[in-house]
Length: 605
Image (tube, rainbow, N blue to C red; front, side, top):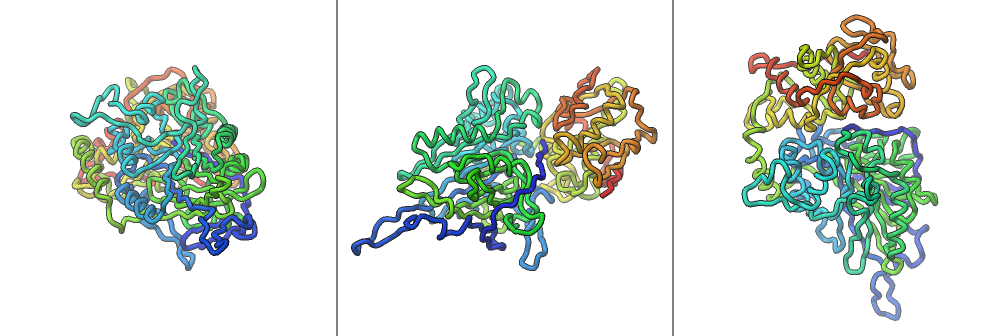
């Protein structure tokens, strides 16, 4: 679902950076280096073999099954130009990601490709309809060497995650292609901090060691400890999630004892840089510059034995240095999301010490641009799965008159959020459907925009089943519960307090509910209690209200404990079915739906 970050500013050490390329070099390259670290000397007139070799680490994160280029604003990255202006660059799609990675590897004797989790889950229909088998197949072809698990790898539970790793056809839907059995991932998924409650052991490998010609690099993979808070209860049943720092440090020691001195941590947790441009100088010395969020404290706590951190979860782009516990700068990277960027990091490996020369680590994010050749094997893969999906994916559900922004909106209230909440209220308002009087939608569950431009041959303005699925891919069941007015108010306050205080999660609300959000205040006071109205009337703390929401929110997900206190639960249809029914009932080719005004929440800044 949605990512959480805590704006605890870190002032990382200054580093050299060529802004246009986003290129970083940690520390003073020569001064801090052992005198012979790069000795390529010519003793006694004979050429001596180099003491070091450069290992290329290519990485990306949060692909979320986006095999085709993401549509609308979700398919662009921000780039700061030399004159300071910011432009949007179209990016992403595995046809281009494969080409980018294959071109990047050329000329590198040592190259390893790693990912920071959420490769699958919350996927567009092309992958999601087939339980993400197409994405695993694509990653196999891309030659991914290793990935951490992310929270979305648990959307369908540990058993399904094991199937993605080990192969085998889906237990309910079987094999999707006649005569073909799903082979599973040929790269390891790492889950060092996820253990079985029964056995106490990690459910998948905690680490792996990449080897070539005597060069050894260990990879440890963890997801965020708070995964159970952002995944449905069924997805994490029987599992325990442990502290990221303690887990990485534990296995870094274990690898060190095995003689593996070069270690990279793959961490599905991240931060927020001060700029959204992928080529932002994260270590700029200006006030307010740098990176904030959970990854800062995690990086500061992870053992100096670890040489670099590949991160994710927040869908941000950054190449930063954060000091390790000994005070030395260490590279922390993230490549946005949806395959729009990849990170190219140079790890200089000392053949004598078997460790990374940390002062020589260089890293840069690169755009997966769409003006390069497509990888033909990916084009064929997409076409093959699209043919299977077409009968369902291309079915029209409704019509819109313009883009309706969800993921791409920049305001707390999303136009698409209003539309979804209205659909949920209408679908669950009838007495026999639950009798709902208000509906809430979590913002992290809205995964894309509804885009006016045609995605295929359906024509502009047509919303297909595939497009609707891409917006709401979780197929959460709708719930209607009793909540008191006091609990309703508490839920609205939990948007901006408790675990959501540092990074608010603003619920999307159905028509009739209004209030003021005062961002000049702090904590729960940011929701001005005296302004909350339902159909013009103040909320009565003692009165009972029937409230519609998806099962994730009804379970108290995303820090909304008050919503988890509901009683007299009625389970309704899926969120996607309710949304598609609303589109069908309220739009035609001649009378399409217009974007909602998004004026239910009055924001004071």
